[in-house]
Amino acid sequence: MSRTSHTSSVTSSLAAERAGDAEVALTFRRGMPVVDRGQHLSILTQLADLSGEMTPWLWARWAAYQCTRADDPGTDTGEIQRSALDYTMRMFYADRVEQTYLDGGDPTLLSAHVVDESWLFRQLCTHELGGLESFLGELASGRLSDAALLARAWVGTRMGGYRLRRSGSLVARDLRVNRDGALLDLGADISAADGWVIGRLVPSGTTPGYMFETRPVAVDEETAVEVASSDTRGGWVSAVKAALVEGRLERDRFESSDVELATDVPGREVVEIGGSAYSILSRVAAGAFGPDSMAPYVAAAALDPEGYAEALRLLAGTGQPETWSHWAALAHEPARSRLLRLAGLAAAA
Image 1 (cartoon, rainbow, N blue to C red):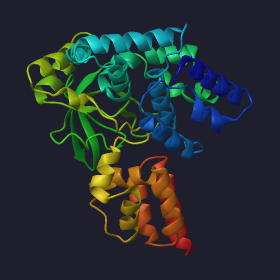
Image 2: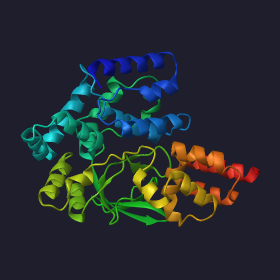
Image 3: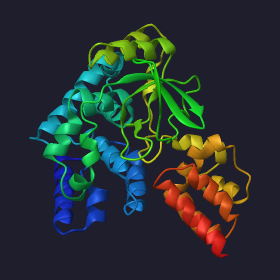
Image 4: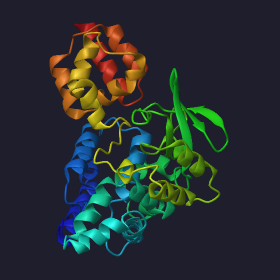
């Protein structure tokens, strides 16, 4: 996206906010200079679909996501974003930068890839370099500024190392203090077969009281312990760098084009498990989906705009009300209300 079109999109957004058009402001807040906009547009589509159902933690995740993509010239937030990108490229992508120049390639394509897909970049920008705090104080306005109050409580949160397990719901053992705590179950363990992860636990604004600020990354035990025991805020960077250099982890572990805000279940996992979001919901209606540990998949399916719309059209009035209610009880807002709606339609049939 050019600087001109970027500025134009920001101007349109602010005008929409002043006009009180919250949905338009939500959808077009901040133009994002990326090459492949599929992921970003997918997020916008889902948030627009949920515009009347947004929870405090979802607003906070939205603010945190935006601060990594706000490169507005002349702003502190934009400078932080660019500094985070430069640092990430030098620390974690120096080999690819060198190879790009040797091949006569376009370095801006690599930069776009890092902004779009690098968890490392997003963490550095949002937290270590202060992007979230800056964005909230400098650029967030209108409905977003009012609704993202929870995000302010996320500022300053340190990276930690955890061991995830299921005991009825999702539990994380904080390796720093060797203590277990129940988490808002958005499916953070889906991509962590061995349970060892690094991430940031933040207030959820609901019950349980804590959640990961974004989907954590599965790592080996040594890295999780090293991150947990670090004495400095940025110590996790050295721990991850060491794991990459030693070959214990691959860089692509920290890359994904499958960024989700409303769930920690990657979209590709929904497809692998059920074929599509609608297919999962249809299996729920038929009483053929389970066990209960699969609840994050059901919630993710209910939050998929296309899958949920198709369920309302084709599954309304089908299935047993108690089946829908059972899965709703295992989910959190906004998925819970959507599943209860399907329960209500089944009961009224």
